[in-house]
Image 1 (cartoon, rainbow, N blue to C red):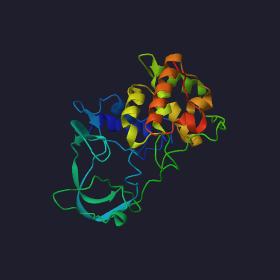
Image 2: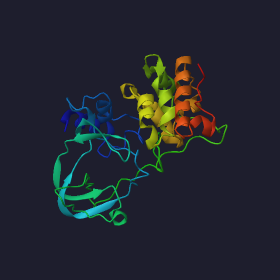
Image 3: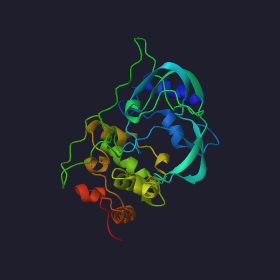
Image 4: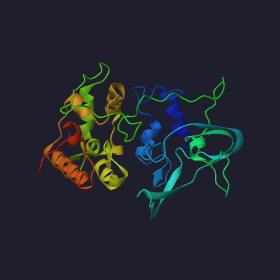
Length: 280
């Protein structure tokens, strides 16, 4: 829905996206536009892929071969409603998704949920269609997704203290540490606070994750994600490259860890002894 960003993304990432993260070396222009809120002017948020609720709604694949109406919500513009979902505690937004009529794939195993490809009550699936010359196939996902909670997320470093792997030869630790340093919001390096909170998050601390990671989209983290994708560990780039947070950042990390513990969540500090912060 933004032709220029689409063409820029295809040019940089290739037609199959393989030249951009998590497999390739580049950050996709569409991701930069979403993070900077320039993809669709006037939108509060942009609908993108997330693993946040994977425990409640496991990601699977169902092919709906019979043509029917479906909504393409990836990169759709959304507006905040001010309401909250009582089941998850997450804020509810309303998205304007274009609809298409044709075959599609749903990101759930409908045989397990008892649902059908064609919904009633004037409802349609948020879905997508993957066309290839030799038939419809699904792109092969990475073995895990760095910095994502849930079963599909990459694991934390282990044990306690963790075994620190060597950085890959095609990753610059200097750039990694620079990205952490530049993710600065009012003197707090958001890259560190987000790492400390995000990868142990549950639906009970959505507000803490939002606080810890707010503003990170304004900074480049492509080298951080490249490193974590290649080594297969989440929230670990600063440890692997030896990047050190500043005093104010360490104090914020300590506070976030304490607040996770108060909600019965074991922070990364308790699991592997990293990103523990420092008491003010």
